[in-house]
Amino acid sequence: MNSRRLCPRSLCLAALCAFLLSACLTPTTSTLHTLHPVHQQPLARDFSGFSGMILLMPVRLAPHLQGRGLIDKQPDGATRASVTHLWAGPLDEQIGQQMVGALKDLLATDNIGLYPGPRFGAVRYQLEVEMNEFSGDGRTFATVAVYTVSDSVAKTILTRKTFRQAQTIDKPDYSGYVAQASQAIADLSKEAAAALLTAHRSQPAVR
Image (cartoon, rainbow, N blue to C red; front, side, top):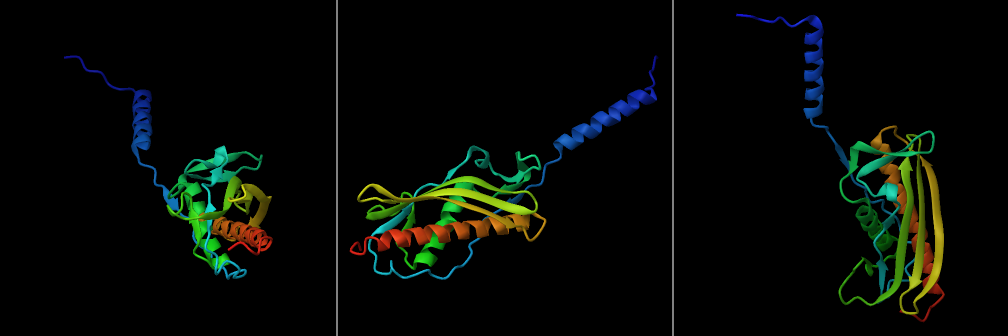
């Protein structure tokens, strides 16, 4: 009976293949993150007797923000999506939900909805948000968004502005990343709320 003995080189190759196969089969642990609300005091109470609706349209994300991975900005300016740190749900929906909650606090009214809003709500103002940058590089978190306030009855744009912010991340891990991302949405909401107040005050007869 013939037998063959594996040479040391063959044994090493077999061991390497087994290691690589086990690495491929080992599940990758992912951490899920959610934006959290940041409580803010009302800017004014002009909308306290307002019967119309303020409707936030679906948030539009730049192509590189549309995945689940948190975006890390590289030293060369390129962006990379993390494969282990993910948003718990679609980022556009999280941003929309946080902005609606923030606007209710800032404008002291519950008459703010996320598209499509209440079935029979009479929409007076419409807010659109285009998120072009929402990423961190380990030291700072950068946000660039364009927001538009429109008069739904007159079908006119009342204001369209770009929100830019770069804030220091207090913690070097992803908890600091998410905390600053949440603060950025709170600050964007505050600026949008101020724009809505200005628009409303320019039409004092409208209730």
